[in-house]
Structures are given as C-alpha cells and as structure tokens.
Length: 606
Image: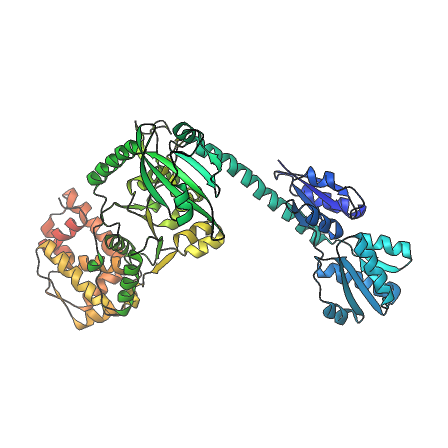
C-alpha cells in the first residue's frame, strides 16, 4: 500500500484534512497527518518513511531541495486565500504598505492585488527560515507596515513585534492536495504492478529477452536468455552495431546448437540511444508456427477481394477519398475509417490492403459488433487448450496471429468492450499478444485498419471508448463521404447495380426515366450505397417493365415496410395452399412470374 504524510503548518488543519481524507478511505493509500513547521522539526522521518509528502510553503521548498526524488504534493494557496489574508490585514492594522512573504512557489500578481484591495502590495519570495527573517527585516526598512505570510513568517513577526496576518489554507486547497496525493498513489501502485507484470512477462516468455544499457551492462534478462547465452554477451556481440547505427536488425545465429533468430532493438529516450533490447527466437519453432498459419490462411480464404478499381464513382469526393486511401496504403500506420453505414468502409479497407506492401499476406476481417466481449477476445487473441469451458483441444490461433505480416480489419470498432480495448491497445503499443490462458507472449507484425459508423469522439468523451486507443487507431484518418454528397455517382452506381442484378436474374437491364433519375438524385439515402444497391435489386425483382419511372421508385422508397409485410403474407398464403399462385397473383395485380420472383427474393418459394 502507498503511504502519504500530510505536513500541516498549524494544528487547526488536522480536522479538515482528516475529514477530507475519509472520502478516499477505499483508495489504496494510507494517510498520516503531522504538525510540522519549516525545517525546525526533523523532516527525515517524514521523507524517508513515506512514499508521498504533502506540504506547503518553506516545508515544501525544503523537501523539494533536499529530496528531489521524493514525490511532493504542494498545498497550493489559491488567490482567494491570499486575498482574504490581505483584506484581514488591512482591516486589522490599516497599513499603507503590505508585504507578502511566502515561498518561491507562490503565484500572485502584485498589481492586481493592489488594485483589488486599494493598498500597496509587494511580494517577497523566500526559500527557508533565514531568507524569511532577512526578507521581513529588509521590508520593514523599506517602509512596510504589515505582513501577510506563512507560519514561519508569523513566528518571526511575533518575535519582532511586527503586524501580520498568517495565510490560512482554504477548503479548496485542502481537497486539491488530497486528490493530487490519491492520484499520485494510483500511478505509483500502477507502476509497481507493471514492474511485477513485466518481470513475470519476461520469465514466462518462451523467447530469450535481454535489456542492456548503453555500456552493455545487463539491466534485465529472463531465465530463457540466461540458459541460452550464459552470463556474458559473447554470443550476441552485434548489440554494439544496433547502438551505433540506431537501427533494429535481425541475425540468424547458432546458439546452444540451435539455429535462432536474434533481434537487436535500440531503445531511445529524448532522441538518445540509451540501450538495446535483444530477443532470441528459435527458428524451428517460428517455421512450424508460420507453416500452420499459412495453411489455415489458405483454407479460410483470408485474402482481400477488392481493389481501388472496384470503387465506382467520378465525383470529386470519391476521387479525393481514393487518392487519400492510396497514399495511406504505402505506409504502415494504423488507419481509422469513419463514415455512415453503407458508405463502403470495408471496400476501402480491402483496397488499401490490396495496394500495400502487405498485399501478398493475410487480410483478416472481423465485425466487432457481432461478437460478445468474451468471444471477441478469444477470436482476436486466440486461446490455449483448457483456457475455458468448451475450448478446442490444442487451442486456437487468434486472428492477430493469423494476420501476421498482413492486415487485420476491425469493423465496428466502436462496439468493442472496454476490457478488450485495453488488450487491443497493448497489441498496438507492444506488437505482442497473449492467448487466453497462456503464459507466453507472441510477437505479431500486423497493420490495423479499423472502421466505425458511430461518433467515436463522442464515445471517448463519454468514457465508453479509451482515448489512448482512439489516438493509436487514428494515426491516419479516412472519412468516407455519404452518398448524398457524391452527386452524379448515384446514377453511376445505380446503373452498375441494375446491370449486375439484371444479369444475375437473366433479364434485360431496365432504363431509368428522367423523373426516376431525379428522385434518385434528390433522395437523402440514409442507408447510403447499401440502400441504393437494395433498391436496385428490388427494381429487378419486382418490375417486368423495360423502363422504370419515378412512380416506381417512389413506391419502393415509400412502402418498403409494407412490401416486407406483404411478402411475408404472400409466402404464408402460398405455403399453406389456401390460395393458388394464379389467384394470389390476380388478387395482387401482378403476373405469376412477378409473384414467383417476389417469393424467391424472400426465400419463400414453394
């Protein structure tokens, strides 16, 4: 548990602080409140035996100077606290000139305070008790009548017989300092937990891992690395090349009689190489895993099915989207595709992969909205045998592993649960995944393309989508324009879909009348391209005419719900045998052929 001490300058603060601390009784932090003034009281115990120190004024300045590595939370006075003290001093002593004698961290505007109080105010900043006494005495010689100061200054003024008012710590300052301490404690606990996890991660990894500093000293290594290379670095001397060149590279080496791939990765801080990470992987295991993945890839047909040539449209909007997507395809950064439903997000994702350097590698698409959180996690990251009830014998590779060297397309990314989001963020940051129930990490080289039709920024503001994950995903952002903004593309797409469905049904493509085109162009298309495609399919299925009028289009757009209900009724009647198809067609005012097509389109043909 994290411990914190609150150094209060006067005893009257004990109750307010303890009352405030009780609000955080469920936090993993233990508070002690102690009365300490300046450096007259020994601070060693307070500093050495606590993780966090909360203090103000000279006490805080002393701790910051003597123990710079200690986490200090300063009780910062508010402008309201200082202003109250000046007003009290003016009312009590009616001075002409007031000096504020306080620690260097105090932030206040002399001119503004003078203007607000109608009295001349100067600020004298101090760092310790000696500074304080010197500042007070110098101020008196300069014509100062009274002082506003901390408790150390108040003690000196008492001894010298000078007028003063001590600045009191207000409720806001108390609450803010306690909250800052709780927040710091959470971060400390997180870092401690992370350290334990990293240690466990290193030891559980099947690969050997070594972290070196810039001088070649071993900072961390797991037991696999110790077994493989022993106490020295004779087997991996290339670490110096990685440090000098600032470049990652791989070497195939014989280590302990086994062919291994050794990766050297320089580590940077503030643009300076501070060390090298070394990862040792057995090549036989890598080849075996890669062979299995490639076979599964081929069996499942995990390849892109579309290219930029399949995107229909000549409007400026679509040309801009294609040009931007082509530029994105040439780099390795993550892409977030946004746009309304039916705008072609998956088509663009396929096309980007097909034009990229990863085109010969897997393209894996998953709709995140169709799977519950636990199932989505096992699909993305895989699992080992026995990880959960019903887990397949031998375990299963996740989609990230299957997509290794290729692209994974995460459609409806906005629907991913928060717990899965955190694991996805780790993949983006570390390029490693852990199967459910497994103890080892597996490195993956995957380009992520995500897509959503929801307002993802709103979800970030609401807290239902992690901001750090959003920024990791949206390194490159591609917004797809809705169909209503693409003008003439509507008729081009309609012509394509009519041709496609007419050919599928063995019919001649009907022509669109001018008023039909006008309706298509003026309709807002809330379902975008998907809705237009459905309308064109309905035209081919429902109409025998070789020319489609505006009335025909209007009927489909206006009565989709009624048509759906009618189709169900038709199917029920025809299936029951109550009404013969000929009589039913006559009743509906359509031909037997049209009725047959309606039943077929709804999978109700008898």
